[in-house]
Length: 79
Length: 226
Figure 1 (cartoon, rainbow over the protein chains, first blue to last red):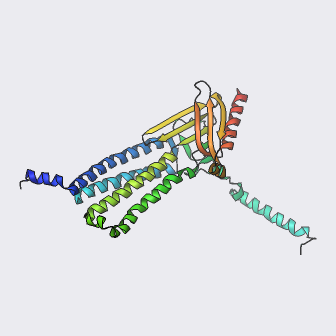
Figure 2 (figure 1 turned 60 degrees about the vertical axis):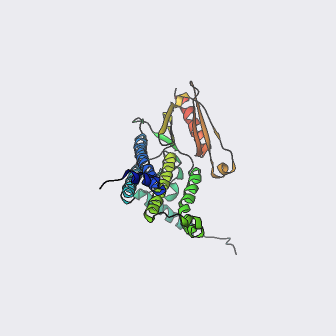
Figure 3 (figure 1 turned 30 degrees about the vertical axis):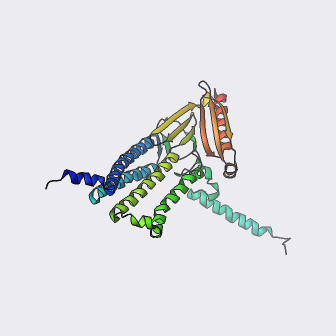
């Protein structure tokens, strides 16, 4: 199947398509940001260690990454 | 009618009974509830903690004991908590109001895209809450038997650790101004050190007068020892 150049141009002129692309880009950036947050939580846990809370915060930061990745992949597949 | 003559016999019996109960408690090794001070609790959300248990920091020496653990008062988190609550209600309100505006109903957004946008919105909101929480959680001011450690954490990627020995402290004072600060008993503590004239700040910490007193006692003890 050949994709016509004109069709691609028309696709990029559609506001809905541009919205989807923008959303995916923002989601990718957000996923990177959650990884930074997780790294920082690990660093801070090494600096201050609280036996009760350190592990919980690490788990929350980890799940934040998981949710971001899952949502990004879902958006990539659905949209 | 009030009792004028009360037999002392009954009181003595009650006294003996209570003594027996206390002995029983001691025997089992448990502390009575009134002995447990509120200041000694070291749960994760504590803002003021004397001799905290379960806390340690990276540069802590083996014989170094944390005497005081301080964080900003929990009430200082109220603004971002309120913002988060309001932001969490916006999509619900928006969905409820859509049928009332013809302009919004005219825009055709696919259901799948709308679902992804809403889920992403709540994920960002969750991150906002989490980041604000860890910013509060990791901003810590520690007083040990040897030094003062100020750990500042802000804007996710910025953290600053400053410490000074107790012998280098020149002055310690506090400011408590404002209605809410007076009501909830929290304020700013400033510790000035010698040499570089560095000032350590413990902002919006609970019981600033007690904090100042504890640090002043530590300085006096150090001066007496040397």
